[in-house]
Length: 279
Image (cartoon, rainbow, N blue to C red; front, side, top):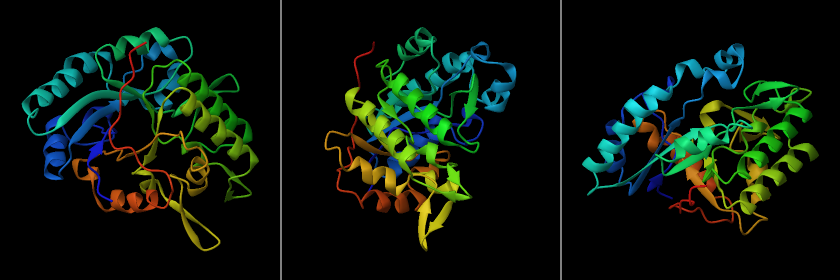
């Protein structure tokens, strides 16, 4: 399986990637891509949460609103025009959902082709909880509920790494896919179908690490059990996202390995997204 499109691409602006818009476009053209979607982490105003939460999530290192309008959009639009005869380029951001701030996200969307929902933090026990921390049953369900709330707004075209909640969900030191994990997965899958949202098999998930179950290598994400459950839903729309943080990360050995993983399932990967009408 060869990758020809990607809608999950980061830039140096996010604070933990390298490369400019042009660096990624040139690499995508070199790799024979027909479509490249930019989806760097969108700006979140500091007033949307406590200062401690803002710093904990590293939002001070990502692009701010000035960067979005003065750097990100102009750079993306420049390469979109410059290379229009060689590749289709779309503009998006990977961004969270925060209840009550829908007007802000819709404002960003006016200048973009799409929003990609990436839930990296979510409300739990009267605060925002980081998905990279250890997860228990309550937090797994809080994550799933946040995804369902977000997708019901109709603002998001796709969801990145929907199974990321499993990364640090363990019991007695072992990674599990128990009844709670299944319930959360079912909620997420059915919300994606109901709201016509594409679900991403994340190509860079294996970079996060792996574990062994009965001598079988498993990724922290994408998780086999989650995507095996997706197989039961013929209406689910599944795409592959490189989650590239370097130009080479558009199609390196890890991406090829994860593409092999994706080929294990019965559903067909959708290569080209149809964007939603803006709410």
